[in-house]
Every structure is written in structure tokens, then in C-alpha cells.
Image 1 (cartoon, one colour):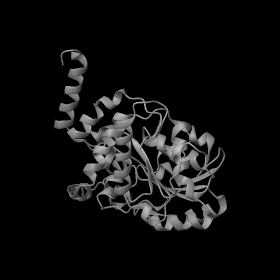
Image 2 (image 1 turned 90 degrees about the vertical axis):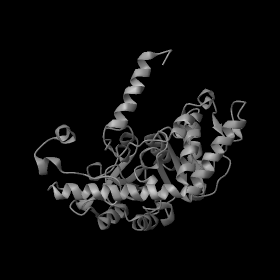
Image 3 (image 1 turned 180 degrees about the horizontal axis):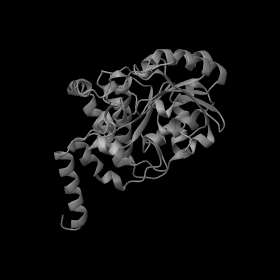
Image 4 (image 1 turned 30 degrees about the horizontal axis):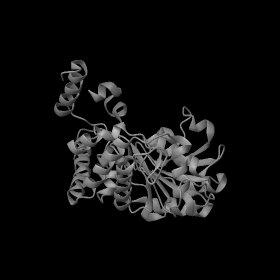
Length: 342
């Protein structure tokens, strides 16, 4: 407030906007004051290339402690064998996971962008689409949201992808994780889930956890429904070994392959203030009150679903099973996106 009044006023303006406005973007959430305090802590000063106990710089006693704490809390929260909490964002987590298992030119089978997928699931405008070969699956019926799992299996058998990617950025229903896992096993692919949007619902017990259904890799952002700082992590099943030594490329070694892919493969030093804030958020998500919070998210979304349907607004997939809705505003109201937002 005293040193830089211009920026201070902008921060105050944003806080007022968030407090008094209506935030309906499914990718956004309000973190706790504790998470914000951790993000603004002295950990922002520290450079910590490497992993706990295996750093390139000295003075790491507290960074090692806080990263280890974040890892253990994440593993407990999602019933994972391993967690890498260093990815700086969801796209970075997905890219690092791809490179952990695949070589340029290999095939990934993921959800079509127009049917709910994400940019990093193979959109032609991304660099990933130039490096890997993406094939796609879709909904069978947009009115119900049913995925065409028979076509998914046929594509997998024909294309032999190295990874089958379950997950979405704009899909209001729940995927059949077991069926995707079974198809991946049948064709010898790694089953990978991108649960960035529903991680908080999984943590709160109101959405299914792909790791419980045979998935080997799960990526997620730590903001959105998980209510943590902006960032991401990669969870996996397998044997945890020394990330500083290159292991054989086997399913059992996925945790180490992922660690090496994140650092030094894709990122430099981790943002330790971000990791400290992740640890705080994971502790919040482990509390019983978070289950009530997650359940209320779904109840609120169902209430909004009813309001839209009562006002004759068509919802793709017929409604929602999670925290987001897809409203056909042009077909229902004959107005475009900006007008519909207002």
C-alpha cells in the first residue's frame, strides 16, 4: 500500500470484484487465507533444483521438508504410490507425463476437443500435436453424454496407442474409468487420467478415483475444485526409486520416469512457495469438512441445472454429474457467448 499504490489498488480492486461479483468459471476457485499466506512466504526466495535429499544447491533442509510433506499428503489424499508436486501448471504436467512414457511420433488416444477434451489432449494448435500422433474418441450422444466406448475400443485396437487418456476440460458427466482401463490393458497402453477439473470432487469422495480402477498415471491441477494454489501435480502407481538414475522404461518404473521427465527433462527449479501452498491445500482437503464442501459443489451444480432446464435452456449431456454445465446458449436463446455471459 505504501510502496506501490498502483499495484495495491489493482489487488484491492480484484478482491472487491471477486467478493461482490458472481464467479461461474469452472476452472476458478477461492483459496483460503492460509494458502495465500504460504504462496507469499519466504519459500519464493529459494532455488531447489532436484528432489528432496537430492538437490543441486545447499540450504535445503526446509524445502525438503515441505516438499516431502506435500508429497505424502497428496499420496494419502488420492491413494497413490507416488506424487510429483513440482509441475507449474496442468499443461506442463500432461506434457511431462507424455514424455515420461513416449517418444516423438508415438500415438495417444484422447477425448476430442469438441466433445470435452483439453488443448493438451491433441488440439492441432499445440506443439504436442506436432510431436505426438493424437487420435480421438467422442460422445455417442451429446444429449446424454454417453461416450462411444465401442468405437474407443475399436480405435485403440486399430491404432495401438502408447497412452489412452481419460479426462476432460468441458464434460459434465463421469467417465467409465474401469472400461477405459480395461481397453488400455487389452491393447498394452498406459491408462492416464487428466482429472484437473474434478480432483477436488475425487478428494471429497463425490467422484470416482481413476487410480482405484487400474490407471497408472493421473495428472491434475491444484486449483479448480481442489481449492489450492495455481499449479499441478502428477500421481502414479509403481515403484519409487532414485530419480537421478535413468531406469528401464517399464510400468513399474513410471514414478521415476515421471520424476526425470519433470526435472531435468521439462522444468528447472521448482517454485517452492507454490509447493508450500499445495501442502496447505492438501491438508485442508484431508479434513472431514472438505467432504461436505465437495458434496455441496455437486448439489449447487444440480440446482443450477434445474434453473437452466426450467427456463428452457438446453444442456449438453442433459445436465451435470459434477461441477460444470454446458449450456447451448445459441440454440436455446439465439445469442452468442459474450451476450450469454452477461
